[in-house]
Length: 287
Image (cartoon, rainbow, N blue to C red):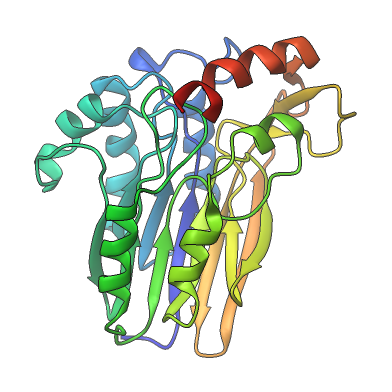
């Protein structure tokens, strides 16, 4: 056991069946390959954390492709791999693809707790089938309370897709984690060292209850954080975060990997398009 717990934080890979392009623009397989290649010199990692939207279409093939890339890379570094579900993920395909990875068969939601070299790794499930926003039910929160009641040897890393911090853009604000204060209340005073999330397709570091919250740049594209409010867009670009959890705190090294075509607009939604997405995927439809 070393004094430092190292994490490669990957998010929003959005793989598709047959390796199809995301938004007909991004080769997500090549994007992930470039990110992992950028990290090739790193020879010791404790955890590869994949924080949701693993797949864009929920296909078994997409999850198998992701595993085939991430897990051998992690194994070369003796790293554990943990996955959580995002709003684009679908439990049937995820379950089928992950069964041979030791995942216990079961119904939604998927949440778990494991120990990696003395560090507890808790995976939460915020995805709501058919929706874009996130939620954590009382049953899952109660399970988390019981789990955190006993401190772990080195503390806890918490993974989830929808982070308990606000988004910067109008569309993503409509698709945030619902009632984040309930989760924050459970985390307050716990041994959680860092919260890892995704969903916003941007490198963001925030905090809740004194705990760092780290959002990795997406593998797929980067959201335009400073667009005019009447638009929501994303540009081509891929990245991740390297996280060091040590005795005195957390150091976050977010990065992007230059590739041909970076900066090209992947999409831009106007107000009417955003409203249609919110009506289809927002919480009002599911209440």
